[in-house]
Image (cartoon, rainbow, N blue to C red):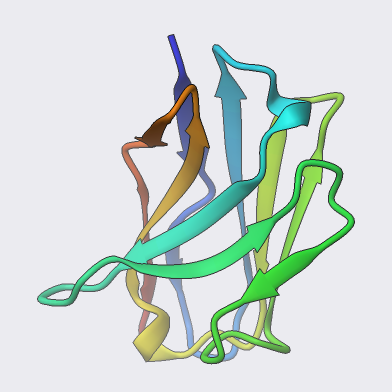
Length: 116
């Protein structure tokens, strides 16, 4: 079955950096676009970044452009989210997402907290 396992979250001071990872299994990773979403307390889940199956094209929410970078390693079935210049408003649970076999799949999420 499709599994997405996020890791790399934690507590970081404003201006710091984190790198999230999402290990995928149960589907042909190299054939699927991947995305990162986040959900802050009391807010709806929002798209943060997406990447095509080859990694040749990416897209970002305006709020993270220039600070976050999505990438993937198809040999490792892993997608990454490098987050720099973190702000308190980046605090959220970050979820890995794939749409495959006609369905949406999500990981359980990893908590990112930005606080001094």
